[in-house]
Image 1 (cartoon, rainbow, N blue to C red):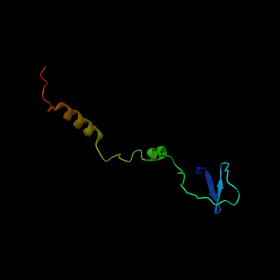
Image 2: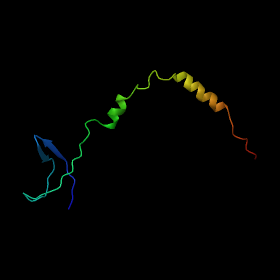
Image 3: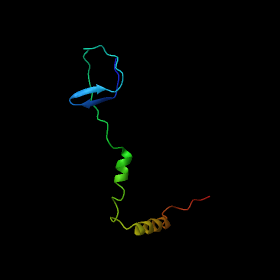
Image 4: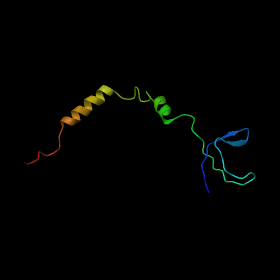
Length: 78
């Protein structure tokens, strides 16, 4: 039977943070997946301003609006 539990590695020993129903001395397989210390949200916040100064935002907005005025779409026949 397999089960995933949380554990803490300290001073070379893995200590379960949850109750484990395994007989003493029983051999088990252990897969280690580190819990990230910072969340994705933290990484997102740290990246804020990364593009600052690389483009002219006002020019980009004007370009977008001018491109929208140019229509290559045919007028539909109703």
